[in-house]
Amino acid sequence: MLYEKILDVIDLKKLNCAFVIENLKTGEKIAYNENVVVPSASLIKIPIMMEILNQVKEGKLSLKQRITVNDNVKVPFSILNLLESGNSYTLKDIITLMIIQSDNTAANILMDLAGMDNVNNYVKNLEIKNTVLQRKMMDSQARKEGRENKTTAADMAKFFEIIYKGEKAKESHSVIMKNILTAQLDNSVMRLNIPDDTLIAHKTGDLDGISHDAGIVYLPNVDYIFCGLTWDAVTNNFARETIGKISKIAYDYFISL
Image (cartoon, rainbow, N blue to C red):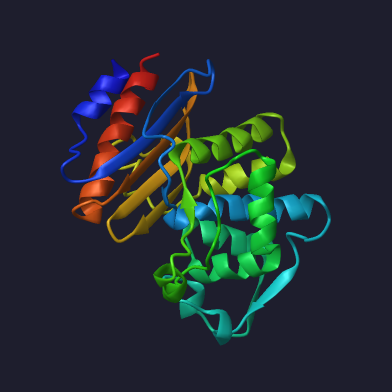
C-alpha cells in the first residue's frame, strides 16, 4: 500500500527517482531504483563527515583543532567564502558548516584533511560498494573529465543506519553526527510538507536537474530512514516538491503506527 501510494505521486515523465524507506524498529523497508548509481551532489558530504570523525576517534584529528581559512581554498556556495580571510574555526565548526549549510569550502577543507583515498577506503570497509568520492566541490574540470561523486539510495540508507545504530549505542561520535544533522538548515525537500517540530537528522544535495534528501526521522513510536534521490528532473523545484510529496506519504504512514 505505501509503495503504491508513493509511485502514484511520481511523474516519471518529468524526472527519474529512487527511494528507500526503512522502519528502524522492525527492519522492514520498501525501495525503488535503490541500486541505481547517480551523482551524489552534496550527499557525498555524509561519508566525508564520517571519515573525519573516524580519524578523530583514532586520535589523528581533534574536534577542537583550529583551521585557518584563506582565500586560496574558498569556492562558491559557501558561507566561509563570504567571511574574512585568515579567520580560524574549530574542526567541529567546519564539519557543522559542511552539513547544515552544505558549505563547499568547508567540504573541500575536510577532503584535504581526511584524504580522498581515506574517505573511499572507509566506505569500502563498510562494505558500501557504489559510493565514491572522485572530485572536490565546484571542480567543473573534473566533472568535464567524467570524475563525478556517486552514490545510490541503498548506500545512503546504509550510512544512516550506521549513524543511527551508533547513536542508540551512545557512541559519542555518532551522537555528534546526529546533533549536527538535526541542525540542518535546508527544509525545502523532505521537510516540505511535514510538521516543523518533527526531529529529522538529514542532508540534502542539489545539482542541475538533481535533488536529493536522506536522513532519519524520529517519531514518538517509531524512527525511520527516508532516502529520496531524483535526477534528470525538468526543474529542481519540481524534484524537491516530488521528494516532499513522497516524504509526506511516508510520514503519514509512520505517524499512524
